[in-house]
Image (cartoon, rainbow, N blue to C red; front, side, top):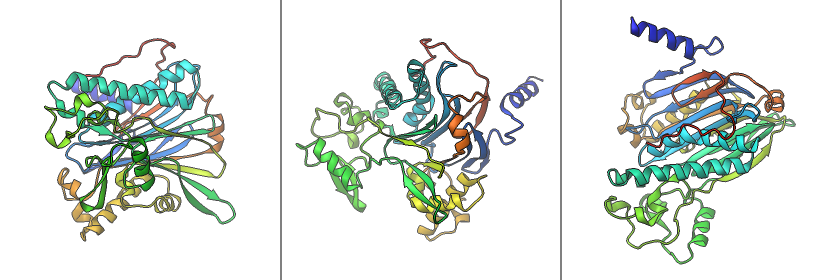
Length: 393
């Protein structure tokens, strides 16, 4: 009797007439939400797992971008590509947007400063988790995550990034009818020469700050490819680069300044009528598709299910590189699957400029999707200055 009641309550709470697949759908290691409505248009989302534990985390939030009713309205998308474990990406998924809402509440607007403060608070929060868990779980010091976010608010698109996930805009060229791919996010990966040069300029006294390792892969201190992240405390705080951390993570020589940075690259774009959509995706997608290939796929196929289509095209490419069939790749279980491709997360956000122009004042139900489920939430607002519930454990 109790279980029937719980199922009934779940159906009432989670379901929505406008979104019959409100909780998304599962196909083996693939989860997808083919279509949904956000304040400024439609969206599509898909995630495929490769690691033993899913290290990619993601979310889309649409509605009030502040913890006060008079704050700004808009849409937030986040892609968090974890490495070394899922702890950091999960932490970001639970805390970054809440920090963003708090700072937007304080300023009563969205801004670069609000986003930068939200990233900083998230980094500091995860550092506190590492500090607490270090005595019993020292390896958490070597867990980190890329962090890509986009905020659409009042006709403006803010893009912030740490690591090598990408946000790519599809922009219509009226004269030709083509849709061009425009990369909006800066990459922080040592494979890029300009990034290596930046690392050398920041660490002029360390000739080994970036090292070419086997398979011609450039790595910071021979350990990690990205140069900016949330977490990876063992390369930011010397006190965590020691025993009992595994020897493979420990540096022989002590360091005085942080090797990796948590300062995001932030860019601001005033949206134009020709801006059609933005693809947010973890590096797992871009390993197999170019920016323009991804944009062409979105442009030339129906909106519904487009994120799932992008993931499947990437999986077909991954199978082709290993000279196997996609049907055979699908049979490979998580963990072992990581030898063929990484976790892949894609969010495609379509832009309806009529909605974008008035979204800062539009009121409606808040939509929240986190990589494997969706909720249509009633508005629960706290006055500015009210402490949010916070739990780092």
